[in-house]
Length: 374
Length: 249
Image 1: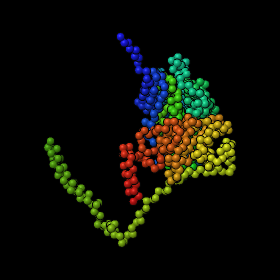
Image 2 (image 1 turned 30 degrees about the vertical axis):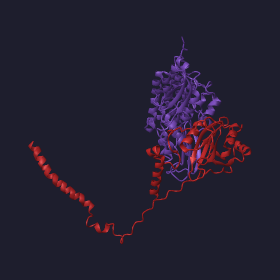
Image 3 (image 1 turned 135 degrees about the horizontal axis):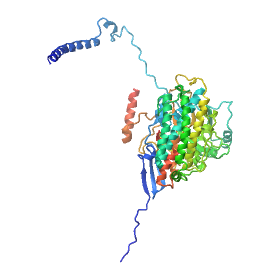
C-alpha cells in the first residue's frame, strides 16, 4: 500500500491583497497592493492618482489671483496654509512687502488651521485604530475653529483666506477675543485627549514600535513635517526659514526619539500646545495698520523662477513658480506636496508589519489625497 | 359657469386680435423705421467708409527660456558654490541669483557628479531633496529644464540645480543619491515625458498607465485630448493637425 505524503492544508504562497481605493481607512482614494505572507506585509505597491485633477496645468492657465482658490482644493482640510504658501511665493517673486498686521493675522490663521487639521488627524487616526470617542471629541473642537474661520471669511472649508500682498479682510470686531477664548477651551481639552490615549494600553500596543524610521533615513526618504520630526530631526520651516511673522514669536519644535507611530502622535499633540502658544502671542501683540501692501492692480511678476516653502500641518509645502514676465498667468506652477512625499515613505514603513498596522501607519503619516494627486 | 364662458369667449376673441397685433408689432423692429432707414442702412459702401476690422492679435511668440539672471555684484556667493566651482568647474554652465535663490545650471553629463559632491561635501551637505520638477520651453532644442530643489538640514541653506534636456535625451536618475526623488522623478516622467534612466521603478504615477502623451507639456491642450486619444492616438493627431490648420487660415 502506498502512503501519500500529507499535503499542506493551506496554500503557502504569497497573497496579493488589494486595499482600496474604496476603503474607509485609506483617508480617500488611495490604493495599496499588498503582498502578504500570512498576515505580514512583504512588500507593497502604492497606487495614487485617482483624484488627479490637473491643478498644476489648470493654474498655468489662470490669472495669478485666481489661483488662490485653486490652492484651497489641494489640501482641503488645511486650505489656509496652501493659500499662504502660494501668496508668499508670488510676493517673493514680485518683491512685495506685506504689512505687519497682515503677517500677524496670517500667522494666526495658519496656526488655527494647524490645530484644525491636527484635530481631524487625531480623530481619524484614533478611529482607524479603534478608539471611537476621540473622534467625537476632536471634531467638537475642530468645529469651534471652523466657526472662527466662518466668521472671518465666510467659508468653513475652502477659505480663500489670503491675497497677494495681504489679506482680503481685517478681522471682525470681537474676533480676537473669541480666538483667545478658544485657546483656553482647547488647552483644557488637550488633557482629555491625553487621558484617552497617551497611557491607554491598547493605544500603546498598537502604536509603539510600529513603523520605526530613524532620522537620517527619514531625511533621505524626503519625509517632512511631524512625520520627520517624530524621527528626531528638528526640521521645521517656521524655525529654519521663517516666513509670515514666525521669527517674532517664541515657540519650540517638538521632536521624537524613537521614530515610531507613538512618537509621531506625541509630536503632533505637542504641536497643539505650541500652536496655541503662537496664537496667544500673536493676538496679544497684534499691531495696528493696513492689511494690504502696495500691489499693482494687474499682477504680473517679472520674469524669473523661485521656490518657496511654508510649513503646512502636513509638512513642507513648497511652490515652484516660473513667470515669463509678460502674461497674466504663471508659466510654470508646481506644488511640492508634503502628503505626497510622506506617502512615498509608507512603503518603507509598512514592510514587515501586520495588515492591521498598515491602517495605523496610513493614519500616522497624515495624508490628504487631494494634495497627493492634485 | 356662465361667467367662465363669457370670459372664455371674450378672451378667445381678444386672443386672435392680440396675436395679430403681436405679429405686426414683432415685425416692426425687423423693418427699419421709415424715418431712420436711409441713414442707417449698411449696404451703402460709397457714403460710409468701412470700419477697419481690428485684426486678431497674433499670440506672442512662446518664451524660449527662463531669465536666469547672473548674480549682482554686491551679493557674495555662498561658500559651497565657490568650492563647487573649484571641484567641478567645467560642469557649471551658469550660476544665477534671483529674489534670494541661488541656482546652478550644470551640464547633463556631469549631473550625478555634481549632486553627489553637493550631498557629501561638508560645507554643502545637501541631504534633503525637496523637490524635483521640470519646465517645458518648446521652442528650444533642449526643451526641458529639470530642476532639483535641494536643502541642507545641517546648514539650513538651499540651492537649485538645473539641467537642460532634449525630448528623448537620457537624464540620469538621482534616486541612488536621494531615495526621495523616486516618486518625484516618476511624476516628472509622467507629466513631461523626461527620459530618466537608471530609475528603479519608472512607471506613470498620476495618470493612468495606458495614457498617451504627457499633460504638463506646453503643447498639450488644457481641455485634454478627449476619448479619441485614448483609443487611437494616430487619428487624434491627424484630427488635431487639421483643426490647427483651420485655425491658422
